[in-house]
Amino acid sequence: MKTKLSKFMDIKRIEFIVTFQCGGKCKHCQSGADINKQGSHPYVLSEYAVEAVKKIASAYEVTSVMTFGGEPLYYPEVTAAIHKAATGCGIKTRQILTSGFFTNSAEKSGLVANALADAGVNNLLLSVDSFHQEHIPLEPVYQFARDIINAKIPNATLYPAWLVSKEHQNPYNAKTKELLKKFSDLPILVDEYENQIALVGRAAKLLGAYYEQPRLTLSAEEPHKCAEVLSVTNISIVPNGDLMVCGFVIGNIYEEDVLDIIARYNPYENKAMLAIIQGGVFELVDYAEKQGITVDAFNCYDACDLCVSLVKQL
Image (tube, rainbow, N blue to C red; front, side):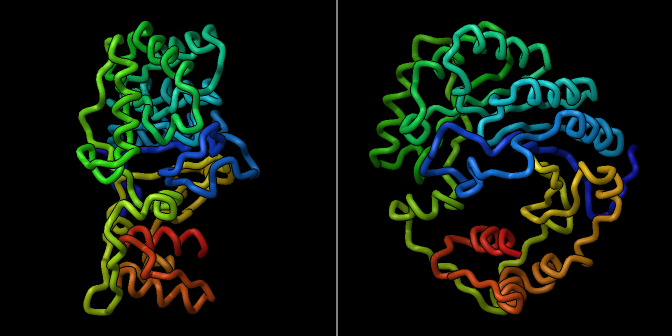
């Protein structure tokens, strides 16, 4: 039995946003304005990422490591190094989410697929839908699908995003179903999980018309409390090294030991987190307003959408 470093953390999943660089401009993208934004680091530094995986796995029963972006395969060596470390630590699920579009070279596509297989990737989600294919050509994605099949990567599936629901009648879903048929000659399944688009980031602005209008109400009687900051099971690491809990930066793995960051984590010492703990999003809005930050809650689809919008500005 491993000892928890912080009573507020029991880490089961580590997510790496390998890069914010991407060849798409998808309407449903949750990263929104972060995509292709210039920053101090274009991608996660592999040596720090590998060290973080090993150290966190030594302290917690981590069951899943995921890499995504942006497009994580713009930097296949980094992505493979992370999964190789996860494999070495005995982490059960080594997952990657990719658009499959990172090269026009069939040779490189095959080499990357084999490298991922060698690194131990055992769950690959290949995004194919009307949103990705609005900007991303289908041919190299089809080629990569063939390559991951040949590389024998386990649990490799097509992973379309559905607007409202898979059964909802709209032009985006209709186009997605047409695109998926183009892969019907390959022995690759469509993921059983219904990946419904979350109205966060760019999706809220561009696709909101297909959903019921926002009805988020804020009051002390209905505070929309969130317990995720009190019982953390998922953490994220972004290209500049920031370690994040549900959108909050709690430290930087390039500047200090990842276990030191985790050990000192205490949401009661973060004023914004404390507001959420004590009064939910209602209290967070009040705290943000005192910092000169406002968001039109009426245009937010739920409490998470509002919280994300505020935290990015705090």
